[in-house]
Image 1 (cartoon, rainbow, N blue to C red):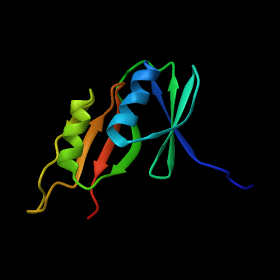
Image 2: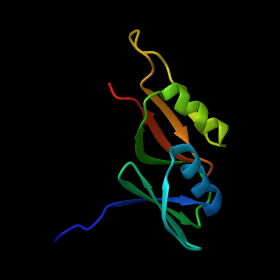
Image 3: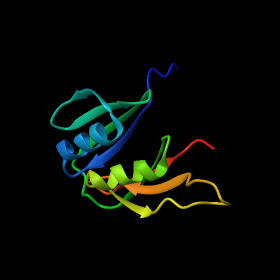
Length: 114
């Protein structure tokens, strides 16, 4: 079997709002959209945002590597998301991890290269 593409799908109670969040915060490219799903490209990966979600807090397993976790976390908050774990220094190094959630409660990690 040949895999043509891998797409990770998350749920959203408000498809338009969730799509805008990922486009604004992460510069996601809109691949396609209809009334049920938006497909977004981020750093070569595809994330599908499917309508019909309940807006409940859900761990996704998505990890997004950024240059500065503190700045990234601030952008998440500024655009309606939030944090479940603030970026923290570890062993005298700059923060390398922030646990975040989007506007529909989908949890993800911001990390920096170590």
